[in-house]
Length: 301
Image (cartoon, rainbow, N blue to C red; front, side, top):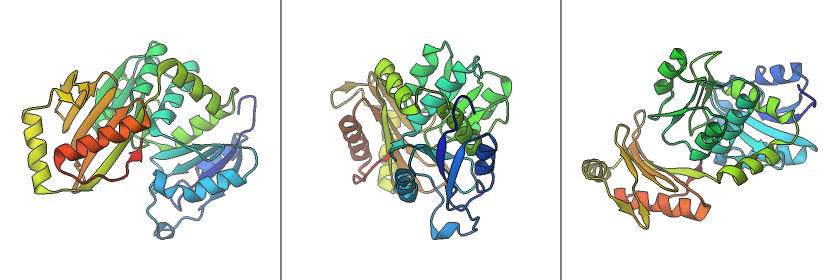
């Protein structure tokens, strides 16, 4: 580790990362405390998904462990990650990716480009641009990044659900690699919290989230109609760009709204970005209303 030995709390969620990420970090000099570190095919009776609702134990452990600088979780097969700061506050996927892109650019690991999903917050794109790095946007699903990574068009790829890849290693998401790079970044002063605050002051905040509901035929009909005739304005926001290759994606001056049927499960999802949390909640609610879906609490991203 560079210049410090960060204290890290790691939740392996009884998955494949147990004995791997903790061993790598310890070998590099980090001080690691692990929870849920026994591999279990039933994952302790919980879904091994590192979303905000499943990080309670990690949050508690991070707050109890004195001097914690970073808390990390990986999902069941350790290809996705989530991060909390030392106070147990969750970093959104957008914030974590912005830190990773900034760190990789500063350490010479990215020069050709960054590939992002169209549901990833714009803070990541603005950070990449500040380093002179081009960004391409792709449909949701990590498979859409592989060609860009394999061809060298992009060095890094990231998505809204905690997936990250560095093409030098492999053109697929790797939660262990992402977590390791974040810990490397945490070993260099100033702290990640200070650096994130600086990035948001310079480039603006990006609040992202999504809501999901089971597929309903009427909602699918509404989505099809909206794709045929997209709105030109949502509330006070004028639609600046429309993309319909992966559901319906509407870009505004201050964020986006995306309506999409999942390609892997019978779910309809609404994604949004706005400059404030209140604006995000309004935009998500408006998207749900367009599909005739009842409002639900969003997952941050």
